[in-house]
Length: 193
Image (cartoon, rainbow, N blue to C red; front, side):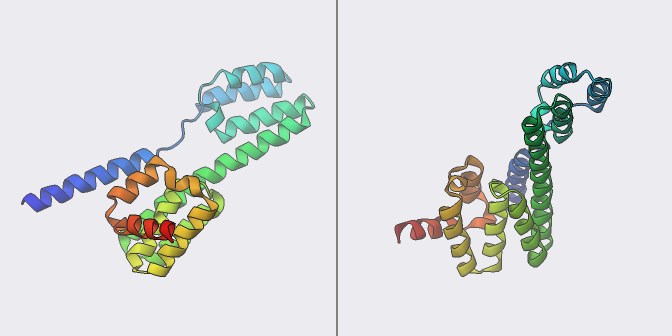
């Protein structure tokens, strides 16, 4: 009975950490965006921009960035409009990448490591600096027992994304995630060599 309770506690801790790391970004309420859209449609571009900038979470919302870009276009601020549309695209890519990480995590739990690898790779292609995507790749390689893949992933991360290994989420996962047992030792060996 004691082992079952300990297992549940560890699972709950891991689930809580995972939920925190993959929380959905705050968004501007739709009714507020509708009001901004009406200002834009009326040609009140400056008022629309002021209204957008008044929302605390507008910078996390691709829809708000799209409206921002449309207002900049209306003001003939073409560089600012293009930059806003690029930001909107990157936010969308990040959110889709997070969904791919969640999908990979689910597939890992279901034991479909091949499909999990595909989902994790898609997440990395969309958002290469997303820490959870790197953790997924390591988890999959480690669960597969593929030491060469683990080494390759660690070497690539050290070379291309050294900041990922310093991320507090990644450090916590490397220390506590049962799917990553032995990864810290492998990392230290690579760094020594």
